[in-house]
Length: 279
Image (cartoon, rainbow, N blue to C red; front, side, top):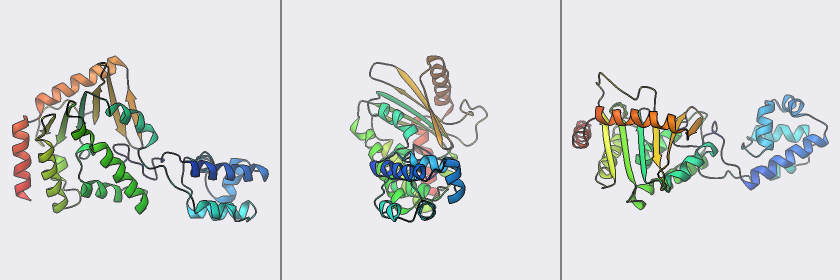
């Protein structure tokens, strides 16, 4: 699962000049050899889709791909040397960037999460726990790039004091204790600190609740400076930016109902403090 635009090996990284150049060289050598992507894929034992992703600069080729491609394309050593200079474009997944750009100027931002603590509220320890549990696994460079991108987004909370932030979090996210007790203690302390900001409201949806308007899953809503509203929904390896006013209005109604179903601001803080004390 990719959350908050995280770039795992399943969610393709943003392209970079080195990735695009490497991909162009692979494509040129393949075409010079008279091989289609499917034929080349069969020889290097990777799918034609993987070959296409590498050639278009969307995928970091693993060492096995490089070695097999060298063997098939003449063993010139060019691909081995070029692979040593490859670098991912650090930051957010391509499908998340449009939403992230809207975030930077939003005057209102609502977030409901039932899977994990939203990226804007995560501590470094909690975020790194998520990154290191990502499947397929990330290497150290990818994990570091993920955290740098997430920390950069978190500046929104303090650098945009006139933006109204609202978060609704499921109590179960705390009860899960992702990363262990120490990580959870630090996480709760951090959330309580953020809740003290004048422009931030944090509510907890109690674990036991007979009615719930958010059963269709996580959602985010934002209002732009020209008072247009957008929504964003994220799932496994993908995200959907929603501009249709009818759909956005429906999600706004659901979010408003959830705000009435969740604990009040004061009761939410009290619950978090009790959970912190029980650890």
